[in-house]
Length: 74
Image (tube, rainbow, N blue to C red; front, side, top):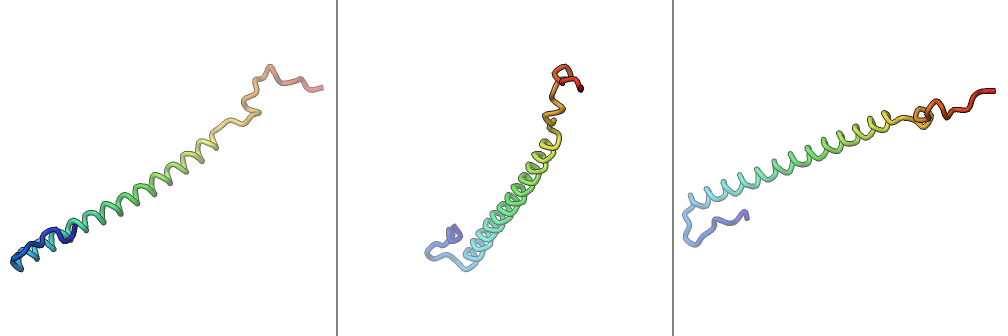
């Protein structure tokens, strides 16, 4: 895609303009990819933290046992 502007008989100025446009497209794609990578890392970190918090907040089996089912001490 970087060579999309070349035509037979194109002037040097047209070539420079095409290069500039192609590099701008490449730069935009590179920035978008970098942004996507950062967002995916952030989402993964948030997911891990939420999972850890949810596991910490789960009740233990002893806490779930109703009081009436507990055998009296002898």
